[in-house]
Figure 1 (cartoon, rainbow, N blue to C red):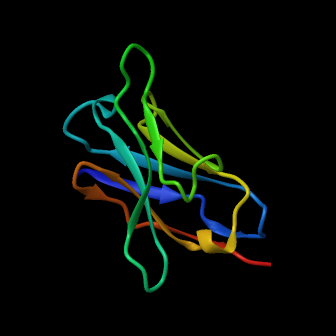
Figure 2 (figure 1 turned 90 degrees about the horizontal axis):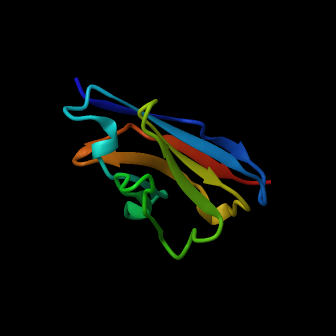
Length: 117
């Protein structure tokens, strides 16, 4: 059964850092075939795409970020481990949300990030 499992969320003070992980299993094709996405959803708000990483080409994977996280968040992938990561730095209270990874139409259950002093 294909699934995505996020981990690494928690409570962090403003200005702090966290690294989220997403482990994929049971996918139909090799993990490196799939573009991967990180979304977040704050309470009372719509789910938003914040970062994506494309399938590798010539050893590199193109990345893209929402303006709200550009320069602070960094997405990466380890295809050998079927993992995608989101390194989050300089966290702000407005980054508080449930964070989800996605591959094609498959979603994980999310991991909560709370930024508060």
